[in-house]
Length: 99
Image (cartoon, rainbow, N blue to C red; front, side):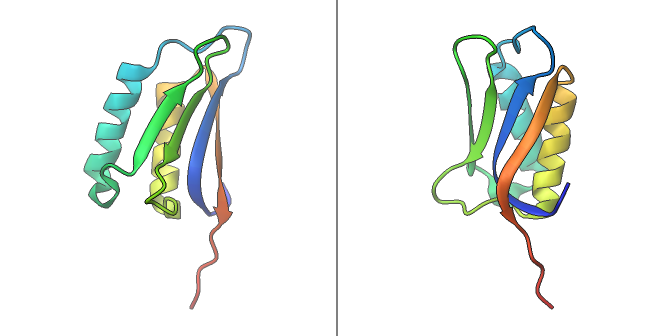
């Protein structure tokens, strides 16, 4: 993954089957993320489309300008584990480190 300051993750199914109801899974996932990155506590929200294919979105709230690359990579890994039947796509701005 190119280093991004991630603001949104989109999860879509890889096959014809829609994603399952994800509320409990996402709540547990975010709790684990906040344990690893407490500085982001409360900065993330999620939603799931009501109709098939039931896309999942995890995004930063307006008070957060995005996740730094290490946090974004960690969250992407959690989402890939939680949704092995889906593709996880991050969206944000390219992170340019300054010396």
